[in-house]
Image 1 (cartoon, rainbow, N blue to C red):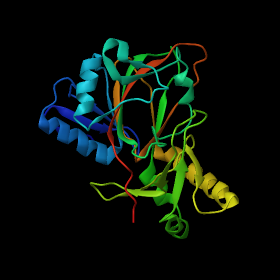
Image 2: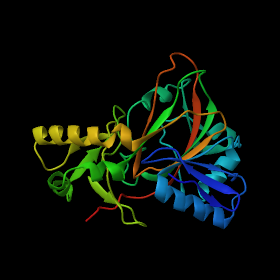
Image 3: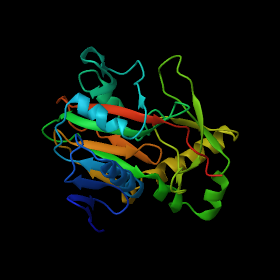
Image 4: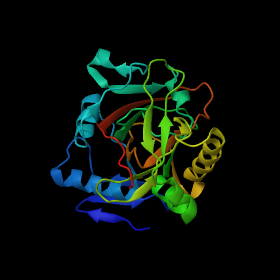
Length: 268
């Protein structure tokens, strides 16, 4: 692993397969070159962490807008609408949503156009615990044997959110391609992927079990111990995450913005 330097900015890898920390860059004052650097680092590392930013909601929103159109949170999520920031959802123990994120998932995979990027800003942390894990889905696909990997091309899976009523399901390819780099990745997650389409129920169950287990191997992950004020951004189509609930009844609160709604691109 090497640390990359750009002017006064450093991008330091944190794990073998995924994750890097960016220092020397403040999200409140980004140049065009800074945004290009962040995009390139996302292509390489999947998830980036900006420690100690401590920004306000307006700055959080402005940072997010560099990476695509804002996606407003679904009505079931709490948000900062009363403060003028309807686009910022509040993932908190106060409203119960913090506990729901304690499974591996890609944000809003149940939408026809899931957000490409999620941007978190940590607000309140328990004294101990409350870490988040991210997993590299390029590595997950590469880990499959060639015959199994080849069988996935052309197959789709249904993603849905439960138990909310009146939420449309979405079908997405099992193998997707990055629109800029061409890299291929697995697109399956434990929380929202309910079934593989056009195969039997037994086949779906067995294959999903295999794919879900491969997608979260420890060697494909990075674990972040948060500090208040930290910002994280990741490529939601190619990276899964899991907010670990290991802090009992202590409070935890984080703000999230989603941007760039896009349908995952089939690998073939």
